Image 1 (cartoon, one colour):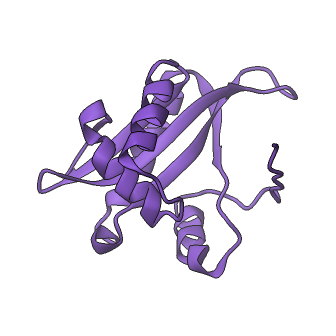
Image 2: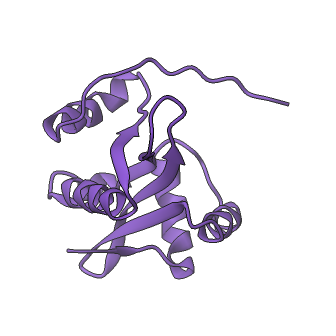
Length: 143
């Protein structure tokens, strides 16, 4: 298994993984999204390779606290292909994300995960990795 920074050549697989995460995404959409993120140094995208194939992705964003001094990292996308779960891939991605956060000076890291039955295993994984339930999220679409 290998963890590396995502590259434009990975977008076909990234689109498939976003779809598995519950966000249907075309390759063209993913190309544009990835190009936007790659042009902003506050974003960092990692991929996991297993037998040479991209089987996981974790996207991070560096932000700045309003309520505290310093910066934090937020995991904004995280999925391992359903056929490759329970092989330590998510743990390796999460550890590398935390290492990146430390390297860029972040003092904390967080993520949001949907409050749906299909995410219960993910929530248990986050708790096992030392993450705590801290908030309730709200969202609103803007036209």
